[in-house]
Image 1: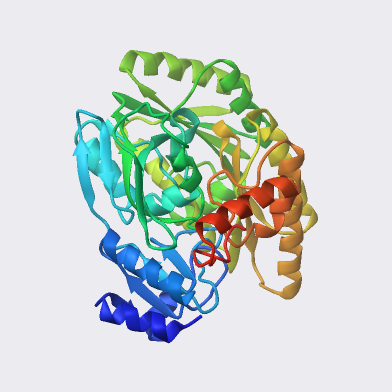
Image 2 (image 1 turned 120 degrees about the vertical axis):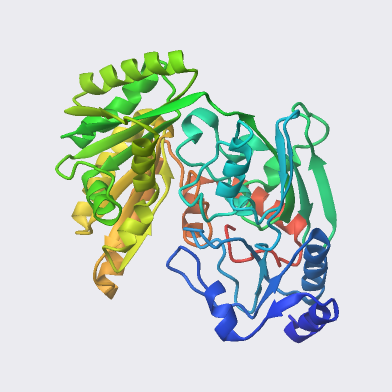
Length: 455
C-alpha cells in the first residue's frame, strides 16, 4: 500500500482532496456507533474522476470507501485502516426526467427527497422513501437497496432501477440497462450491484423508473392499549386483501419520545399506534379507509383518528420520520437494528424483542414498516458502561437469532456493513458465503472497494 504514490497521482490529476485530520474527521463516522479516520477524502465531480481515483487506488492498493451523506446505520461508510473516502456528494445532478418513458436519470449524490419533489411537480412518483429521505443520497439507497414505509405496496429501490453506470475497481466503466422495461439480455448485472454496499463497484449514474402520482392519500392513526393487538391488526389487514401505501407500527416508548421531540399529537398513554396511509383514486381510497378502520376496531383499537387535511397528515409523518432524532435526544447512544420476518411472524417478533430487552434491562423502543414485516428495535443506552454495552451486544445477538428462527433475515434495508458481519454465517451456508467471496475476488482482486464491509 503506497499512500504517497496514490496521492501524488490524485494531485497531478487536479482532483479535490483533503488530508488534514481537522478536515477529514467529519468523514470518520456515520450514523452507526463506529469511527475510523480516513487518510484522505477525495471529492469527485464526474464519472471520469471516479475512474481515475479507482484506477490509481487499484494500482497502489489503497482501500476506497464510496460515501454519500454518511447516513448508514450499519457502519457501511466507515473507512478501512489507511484507506480513503471517495465522496460522491458533488455528483448531485438530476440529469433528466423523461415524462414519456416515465424515467429519471440521476447522479449518485442526488438527495432522495430532492428527486421526490422534482418528479411530484410533474405528477410523477418515486416511491422508495427511507427514514433518512431528506438526507440520504440515491447512490447510498442503491448500495443498500433501501426501502422505507412505502415499500409494502410499492417495493424497494431495486424495483425502480432500470439501468446503471458503474465504475469497477480497476477504473473501467460499464453501463447496463436503460429506459426500457423488459430486458433479458445477458446476466442481470443490476441485481449484482444493487445492495452490494459498494464492495463490487461505484454507481455513477442510474436510470430510475417512475410511476404516476396517486390521486390522493389519506392517513389514519389507530390507537391500541395492547401491543399484540396492534401487531395482529397488520396480519388481518393483509388477510383482507387490503394493501395500504404505508403501514407503520409504533410502540409506547417510541410515541412518547417522538411526541417529546416533535409533537404530532400521538397518544402518550397508549401501548401502540398504527400509522396507516391509503392512496389511489378518491373513490377507492374512501372505500379502503372504511375497511381499514373497521379492521382496526375489530382488532381492539380504542380509537381511530383520520387526519383531517394534508397539514395534519404531514405532521403525523414528520413525527414518524423524526424517530431516530427523538431517540438520540433521550439517551447517550442508541442501537437501532433492522430485522425482517414474514408478516405473519410480526406479532411474535415484537413480543420476543420486548422480552429480550427486558431480560437485559435495556430500555427499548420498537418501530417498524410492519406491512412488510420489517421491525426496527431501538436499544436506548443510558450509561455507556462496559457492562451496559455487553448487555446490549447480547440482546442484539438474541434479537437476530429470534428473527432467523422465525424465518426472517438479518436486515431489510440498512445493510450488513461492519455491524452485522459476524452474523452472516448464521443466515447463509458456507457454500453461499464462498460464492459471495468468489464474486468479490473476481470483480475486485486487490480488495480495495470497501474492504472491511459486508464480507
